[in-house]
Amino acid sequence: MVDQQAAAQCAKLCDSFYLYDERSLTRSAQTLRDSFPGIDFLYSVKCNPHPLIIKALAEKGFGADAASLGEVLLSRECGLAPEDIYYSAPGKTPEDLARAVDLSTVIADSPGEVERLQALAQSRGITLKIGVRINPDFTLYTANGSSSKFGIDEETVFSLLPTWNALPNIRIVGLHVHCHSQELDAAILRRYHENVLALARRFSAGLATPLDFVNLGSGIGVPFTAQDRPVDVAALGKSTSALAAAFQKEFPGVRVLIESGRYATSAAGTYVSKVVDKKVSRGKTYVLLASTLNAFLRPAVNHMVEGQNPGKAPDACEPLYTGGGTVEFLPLTQTQERETVTLCGSLCTAADIVAEDISLPRLSVGDLVAIPNAGSYAYVLSPTQFAHLPLPRQFFICSTGQILES
Ligand SMILES: *Cc1c(COP(=O)(O)O)cnc(C)c1O
Image (cartoon, rainbow, N blue to C red; front, side, top):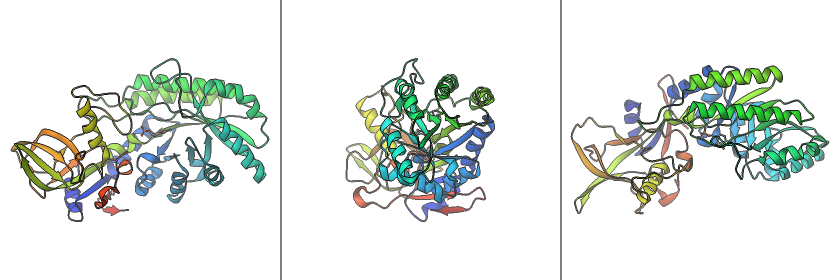
């Protein structure tokens, strides 16, 4: 639900903005916490690094899944402890590693990175506990694995374990698997969690040191369309927590982690832009919003992709493209009368169109149009520098109702 009063208040300050609602954020976070007893959650910072969001989720007990050194540093600034920050990304530089090892648990993404971490630890005269990201021999949808730029193939990991066990300055204490985002079927996610825990058992059997953590990655999706059925989080939580509890019995003290970006944040965010002009060209009515493509890329990408594949949505390409009909436009007006319009932004490019010939309540200059599900992969993924338009502002509605910025 869009907080219309807050939107109207913010619209007095600027023409295009994001509204993040702490009440929705903490509700989703609490749902995850309550549904998965015994499991710890990490917030995937890359989907929305707004500090107030990181802090609100930290208050709900979420650690950080950092996808860059920048996100490690940001998570520290937001008050997270190094033991609650897990840094997993391909292509970390030696400088990234040198700074991150003191501030987070580093998860190696390649055999070369394990060697670089060994050299780093040796040069400092320390023993370093790290995790390894594994590209498993399964996916969410298939019994066999696929080739990936992420992690180290399961087969390779097992052949390297004896070498890694002998490294003087490295202790491998955890594994991380993440295959896919935006899955709504709890049964598929359950089987995936089961497969990762089975992999963790085999991995641990080959390790010289006890396992500290198993990171199951993300996958829990959010509904975008009226047809989308939300993940049955209660059922999934029940079965995954049972699997995790059995695992923790075998491996006392091991931390089982789930990462989540979109589940906590997507519905908590709304993008709002003001109608700045309206005109007719050869029978078509154009409603011009202050900013579309430059401030919130996904709707423009959706429109572009669907234009190339009319009536047939191609596979999702997360987080840039989610699927057909996944963007909703909500005029914040009381008007009952409807009209068919083409909705576009004010950039000097024909690509800046988000919807063609859609029926909406009649809009006038000064009205607001909201796009829900803008809490994740929205602001950060958008080309906000393009054409020097004003940056969209970001407002945060606290649980108390107070509206904060930055
Ligand atoms: C992006 C990413 C996530 C977050 O995925 P969501 O679908 O937003 O929950 C989690 N883990 C890893 C490794 C990622 O790359």
